[in-house]
Image (cartoon, rainbow, N blue to C red; front, top):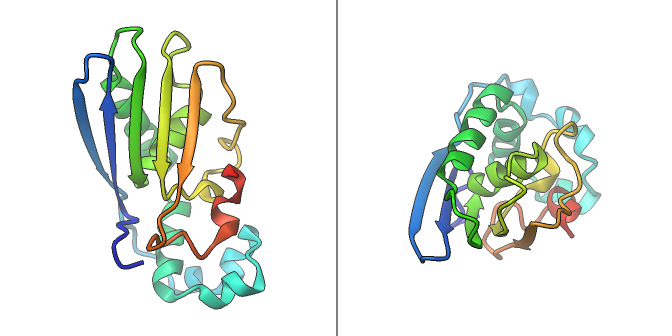
Length: 167
């Protein structure tokens, strides 16, 4: 968890003309009750015994921040990302990490990516298992390709349950 920044995210956009645009996002940090960090509050994640042993207080805090994200705030971030996409029909490459990957997944799941745009995503350290169930739709669309990448020092790496949805 040393080099990962789970509560921050970056999205890089490169269009056919090699114009590069960088968006930075911060996950709004909310105060949580101590009871929100207990294993019983995370039971819906269905973590394995090994994953539960790896789950530190820092991990619980990160997970709780993702789970408590206000849907309106997420929609604002998704809209900001989608409005930054180029208007042209050229191929667009999107690279993101941590919370930026979460925003990209939400944009795809909300069906916000224009159908006329060919777009490929490289999502680094995306906690796919934390996407709200109502948004967790299939990512297969003709105009969208998604590549999931996980770094060894990522906060999500020890928890296959949090990213196996993407496999």
